[in-house]
Length: 196
Ligand code: SF4
Ligand code: SF4
Image 1 (cartoon, rainbow, N blue to C red):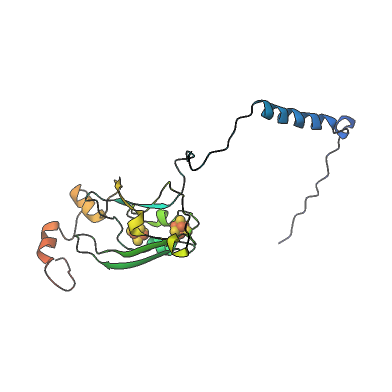
Image 2: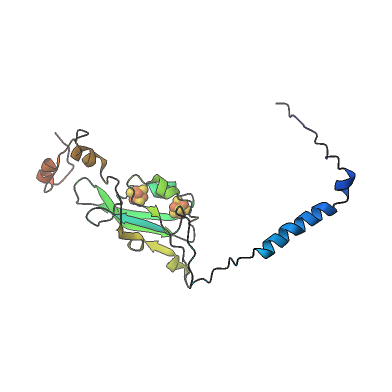
């Protein structure tokens, strides 16, 4: 493929522009205006806390469901989406109807996290959000690996359906393979459950 080259000619300056003094004075006038309208922008942290923009990406928060339980179903999509491999999840079987798994361990290593928010984008359950906290200082490395117990905040609620199939069923918007009544019957059974 041929490369196109465009030669740029430097602009021709008039005698007035070649003096440079008008540009110097216009710069000084701008500086003077800033001096006269001086307003301090220093924040006396930690006594004063800066107001953050609503879309700020701080330390993660895990919202609660209607029962005040963690919404995460340990699908590990966030773990896969994380570009720095900061998330580590160990799943365990869950007893709740409609939820197969939950996280036994859910850690985020803040020595790796770059607060990109990809994990939040990847989560299908609204189980993870970027929060507004940013104080992460620690005297040791272990203190920078946070667990789900730290992220979980039952006061943060989510409107998103935790179990999409059940949500559609309750709304009368879809067909469900195993109704809650059927699921009650098979709770005590061992082995794999298949709906009839
Ligand atoms: S914010 Fe980005 S880097 Fe941090 S845990 Fe989520 S995906 Fe990984
Ligand atoms: S936080 Fe969301 S994406 Fe990550 S494991 Fe839990 S449910 Fe899956």
